[in-house]
Length: 326
Image 1 (cartoon, rainbow, N blue to C red):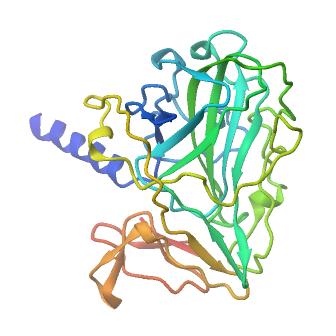
Image 2 (cartoon, rainbow, N blue to C red):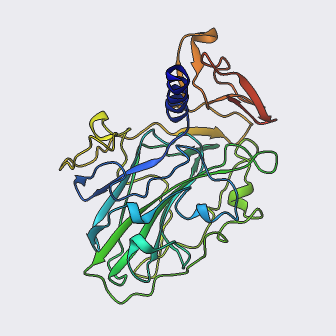
């Protein structure tokens, strides 16, 4: 019996370690809080949500508000979402908010959502560059009404081009109480699910072929001055969180401001079908001097990166443009 339980525990640990990435830690201003203290903890480990009609698109699988604390934030305060592993799938990152009718802990996110920030690609010299980072920062709009909100961050991985592949959503929601707000009417608002469709150009885009423009899915960005902007790069990004704050059981609040170190962007050629492999998925060794970690890209039309998978994984074809170490 002990051997069976031990094997099950080992399998669970490997599954958690070898998956993708999750937004797990919130900072307000210069204070970084423990993992999942104010962010709803999901139960699908670091795996994505892929069904466009799934209510889990709101805050992720198993994200239980009743088990999560709510933090007070002043309108105009800055915030940062930090991941366990930097984002390495190409695609946009967006931040949404939805006002709860009562307490954030009781809210299922079925009301309207408005967008406050985007990070999309930049196109220059025939290439498209994505900012792949360990943290993403924004600011609570000063004019929104006071009250409880869900603050939602979303990374949309479009590395598996539709329809042969399925884009992936990596999502987390923080619970906040906004104070000192105004009388603004945030919008436009959308429902989730419902905000993203298979016909959206930002969902169906093929980053490996003639990729020279991109429209980020979702509504326009809300701004208190009536305007909005798409942010191609974060104003503050950092590498993966320090080990002392990655365990829920041992994490404690700190007053250290998140680092502003920029994680290397991935560049995709728009004049050909060449794509570089995610920097975070390779390590030395193997044929050609490198190997690809499990879940990383290892092949596809025009791919020129490492093709040897790390021990325990095999390069598996997903479609003509993308093979992955599984």
